[in-house]
Amino acid sequence: MPTAVFVQEGNQVDYTPVAAVAAGDVVVQGDLVGVARTPIAAGVAGALAVHGVFDFPKATGAGTAIAAGASVYWDAADQQAKTDSESGANKLLGKTTAAAGDGDATVRARLSQ
Image 1 (cartoon, rainbow, N blue to C red):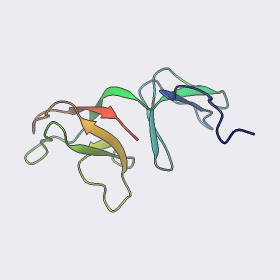
Image 2: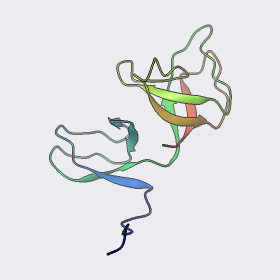
Image 3: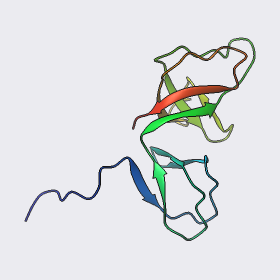
């Protein structure tokens, strides 16, 4: 019997939500963070992207700039990408692919789990 059996490439993972999920919603399952690329109805299997580059919301104002190449984390409570894991409460999204200034409302990041 083989130790492991190939299932899929892994750019997306199956997900069946208990409540409807809109396209672009960030979904956290334990330490796995994914993005719904299309709407997923409650109780219906869909897919979450776990690889790719996305624009995520971030805070604006003095001191909120994020450099390119920085690790960013998803704060589910604030629905924002942040550079602070807050002792593990925020889950790793990945690395930024472009700098975002204090006045930018989004930051571009490559998902990496």
